[in-house]
Length: 273
View 1 (tube, helix red, strand yellow):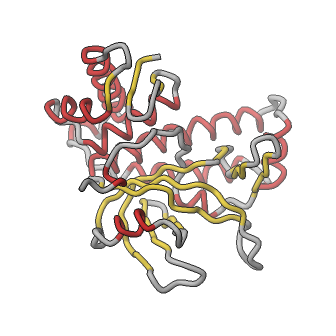
View 2 (cartoon, rainbow, N blue to C red):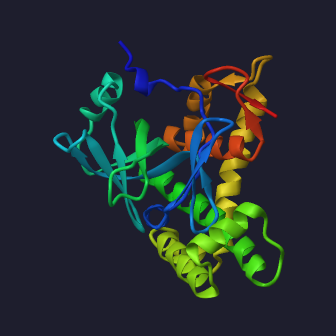
């Protein structure tokens, strides 16, 4: 019987930030209209769901008040709490040995424990991954972080901030020095991505490679779509023939959904918007 966590669920849009930035985050917003909890990070990311890809370094089955796991990226460690009433998820964790690459999605939950940051990351899904997908996640997360830092730099230079931009800048004491520190974090993270020697001369090639994968995925979807689009299961087979791993495919699909290039007409199916 196929494990439910190994099947492809509805691919929801998630935010991407590095672990170090999550560790520095303490601005928690409760959205009354949607009854959701959202984090606003020092670079300006708004997070209600998180996606990361990194190295699973610990599965702790004895922690209180419950299980948790640690997933490392080049900047630090994410700690994800695990609900006790998730037997399918716990069964999946039992199949992993550490260290191994995984991709993870998580939701945000408020935490009123004294001395804590006010929120916890609650593990939602976890899948086996690989270095290629991890590297792609680093590059994509770096690009998004730099875009946010550019916006903050524009605000520091005199542009008028919106209400929530003003709120985060006041909360974190946003300064040029702080932006340089975060940019340095991004630089160190991308330094962990292995590239061929001739690629190191042009930092723009990383984003070009990512764009090429996105174009390949869109082309595959276009070629094999029917009235309902194409199932992710079928698309995985087509992608593997093009030497695109399942982890990299799912990562790329998430990015394209976030950019409004793709959508899901029904669970497990992808279609070009």
